Length: 256
Image 1 (cartoon, rainbow, N blue to C red):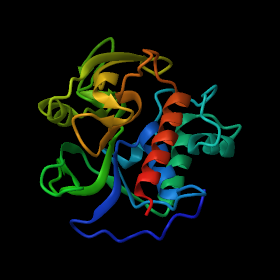
Image 2: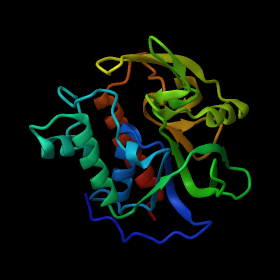
Image 3: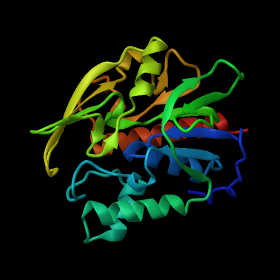
Image 4: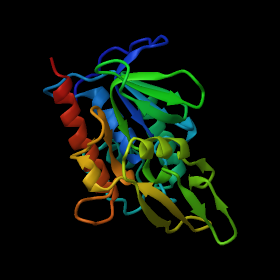
């Protein structure tokens, strides 16, 4: 990858090239690839929004032992750098440091509640709990298993996609209000302590044109929040491959 461009200094109303909502597996990989660019395309000015910066790159499993990270991905590079250490917390810390050190990525702790393409042509406006709107030419939703998520353990249920990580209820309601059909989905976090199940909403393949949301002109969906056309479950490798594919697509679209 090329050296990314110098970091801009956003002011209120700054227009990013791409805003990525969600900083798990899909969002972190996509933001990193977009900011770094490729041999044929220079990097972009990327906003990466997470509800908690301490959760950047969090994985469901307690270790990365046996993780099928895509070769050449940021996640594979960090895992190789840390070997033989495989625990999830050292992995998370190292991944977060790489993202913080990547020129071209702007990290923001915030909760996106709604999206709007209506006011300015070629601009996606993201509303947040905190108030200030965020603006980008394109937006990618990569919120994983967090769209109106409910986490169930043997003893309780909470509005969360992972333990102590809150759900995107308002964003799910906004997408549904725009006519998107969101399909109930569930997954079990094996190996977690305590073990838990998450029930959440996903975007089915019928609502997507590739990664683009059919009902919106410049908003994409990526990763665990989407359902694969073949009906197979997502894996680390498949999500990272999708992030690489979408990054190439967006870089080409942004090229002069």
